[in-house]
Amino acid sequence: KAGVTQTPRYLIKTRGQQVTLSCSPISGHRSVSWYQQTPGQGLQFLFEYFSETQRNKGNFPGRFSGRQFSNSRSEMNVSTLELGDSALYLCASSLQGRAFFGQGTRLTVV
Amino acid sequence: AQSVTQLDSHVSVSEGTPVLLRCNYSSSYSPSLFWYVQHPNKGLQLLLKYTSAATLVKGINGFEAEFKKSETSFHLTKPSAHMSDAAEYFCVVSETGNQFYFGTGTSLTVIP
Image (cartoon, rainbow over the protein chains, first blue to last red):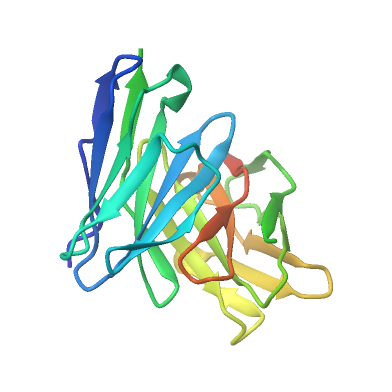
């Protein structure tokens, strides 16, 4: 069974640009959640989607948004990038309360 | 509100000696508790999960954790450390099932 796949693995963007990250969950998993990992703040919850609906949202500005498609694949978008958005973005797919994480997308904003 | 406190940011042990990584949690309900491990440049791997079936939870790679409600603790242990155990460990709490709150992590160093 394939694991959680995140693309791209690495990304370099300039301040002010926008970026879209993709996450393909494990087959059969309908819940997808996103996390931001930084050395200073650790792992912080961004949002969670289930059956194309956002169920929970963390404490992040509106520049961070996401969506989920009918095949459960999810995308996360960050607009007007800031230097502080540089982080490892992790996606997790969940089934019965057990989360499986992808390897993440490392975003560097310059 | 739920939160997790990992009491040590860094733990160093000699190979073959016991490992203890400490975690305290705060939750309004009966939470699910997890330990995840993250090796450098790798994703997060689930070590074990507590969901109230048994207070002593056995995980992969010889790790186990004991849920103590009276102490609101969920410490991770292993009888004998191996070099491959060197990694970052995260204690995680969840009330809703799909929203996870992470501790700040404990970096484990294993000395040969």
